Image (tube, rainbow, N blue to C red; front, side, top):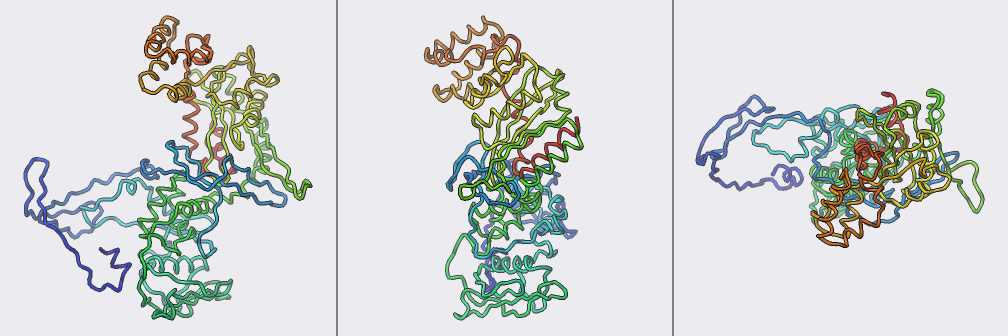
Length: 586
């Protein structure tokens, strides 16, 4: 009711219709006409008067460590869209694998968000990041959605990047942005802050305005219905000596009414959304677009498009962790610095030439692939089990890409990342690049076992004559979870899949035959499908002890889940995060 009152101030007398109902308590009795006083936690000292029929409960306040929203709100992401810019003397972002505009429904968490998308806003002005002011509830019966209780509110109040505040309404401690009228002489620190305030006012009032003039010295906006009964106008100018923006003229408030009802608002562009979602992205870079979209809609009362929220998230990440394009330029400097400060580090950076008019431009290059590992990893692997688990996972950033990773485990079951690579996608060339450097620099030991899924790129790279991965130098084994998933595509039913997994885990031939006979009795075609794969690749009783009980690539999946947050960051921040998270602690 109060939200409607703020959005439609012309309605002078809002009415509330309330129904009086009886609530049956857990003991079976009816709570009728009880007058209970309570002081809920976090409320003011004045007691809240309870309803005559619904008792007031004192909520238990629990501190939640996780800054992310509820996991069931994760949504689908876009495809990647390729967009390159030629930067002089620079590395340009690698193109993602997929190209397109459509939204793909993905049941897994590995949603790949799209590349840069054209702005759908009329204004191309950057937003200033701000601070979310949060107050305690004054009612004991207030119920919040579950994702509100899992936000790290302290993290949202931290100072922003480059002196910017980090949440919405940073300069409005009372939380009245957009609800009060502008005043002549009102000042703003910069143009971004002034524009954010004007747009927020327009959104909160549910009205539209158009920009009449906008440059580095002045900004003039008029109501879209100016001349048709509404005289709303605002003029802001730059005071050069003080370097601040000031309201020079203001005709308000609006005297027009909305002529149509819309679920979106033109002023709710990605700059405004970026300022609002900044604290959420800072607290958890992996927060999904759907969660950000729902939070934006709940705050502003309008529902922006999925693309606009995606663009807002990319802008927030760039403000916090650095520009997406410049991040590629930081890689060569970082490589040189690591090799100088940590002798023995192996970093292989590959670039692609830039062709302009059929000629190679020597002054710039495209980023292609990066392989890196550190001396502690190389030394530690000598004391681990002679096996590596390899896997690839998508990057969620602006330019997409894939992260390849090799994981080992010591005798105490401690997991050790030994090498990583940034590549364009999982294909024969990228896996050959990764595995060749892994063999050369990290895992030269003979008799090594490689556990992976059945990707054709891995198969081709391991079977290359000059790769060093052929028996007896090295052996290969399949992850049974991936084998079972492929099996389930042909044969439906959980029982059949369970029988195949049990046969794979069997440690003796007798036990294997027992489960395989049951599988054959269900459907002989199932056994024929399994027999097409060499037993040494997917069964434990034929692995000659090389697996050490590792039937899946779960140790790789564990590391992928740990890296979920940094997979949303620019490439330089991603690589630096792996250095700081693991190798400095070895």
